[in-house]
Amino acid sequence: MLRYTVQRILLMVPTLLGVAVLVFFLLRLMPGDPVATMLLGDAGGANIPKEVIEQERARLGLDQPLYVQFVKWLWGVLQGDFGVSMWTGKSVAYEIGIRLELSLQVAVMATIFAVLLALPLGTLSAIFKDSWIDQTIRVFSIAGLAVPSFWLGMIVILLLLTYFSWIPPLTFTSFVDDPWENMSQLIWPALAVGYRYSAVATRMMRSSILEVLQEDYIRTARAKGVAERWVVARHAMRNALLPVVTVIGLEFAFLIGGLVVTEQVFNLNGIGKLFVQAVARSDFTMIQGLVMLVAAFFVLINFMIDMLYAALDPRIRYR
Picture (cartoon, rainbow, N blue to C red):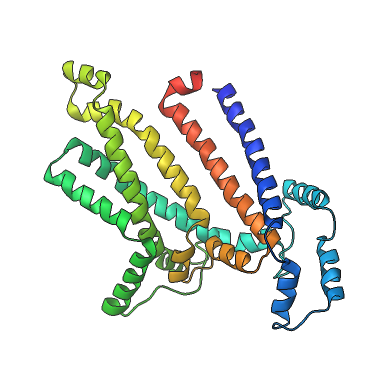
């Protein structure tokens, strides 16, 4: 198990290094000058002297060769310094940090809701295949796939406003400072996102359970007289969870930076909204920091999935 874990950890290093190389150099291939864009925005569209642009480029270190810029940036990343935002003038780590709590909490809450909904529904749908229970759950899950989470969020806000004359708080409050205020704001986007999330996991759970129930060892367990609930709980569920764990993990990593429209609907100043602002402003340092953050989440989640694989199926770690 130790060797398996070490191998997975070592695979994380070249992955993150490759992401760093790609995001840094691909951004430099984008047309336009970010410094000129920034100065033109600050000046309200007025013409900016070339000397001023060159001075600003020198201040930001953009006049140096690309490989020098990359080495300096990568060394800073290794030390936890992602640079300074070209637009706000504040540390990229600070700008991300004040928004990460919100996005991370929504992602965790949506994941918990999705798992609690998907695992039992997917299992019931598989056990009672082609029955009215199966048909109802399939309609419920297909509706979750078809309905965009941001549209569902708008419906939730309209219903709260129409029937209860109440809307969620517009200002984010940390859970530590005021749990009630925090939950009253974030529970609704978490439910809207978690519903779609659960639909994907439910469909995967159903198909996985159905596939496992056709295996020889399941028929052997039934032939020995094992109760059906123990056949499903002890034999089928463990192997059926392998692909479901993958879907749940990747969806969670996506939620960290992929809730752009949902954050707009619920007026949440999270990582997704910061992504859009950084791209619109050609803020290279901010984009680099955000991409590395999301990549790190994906790599970390994949590592955790690999560990769960080994726990659920010991054959994996021995291979």
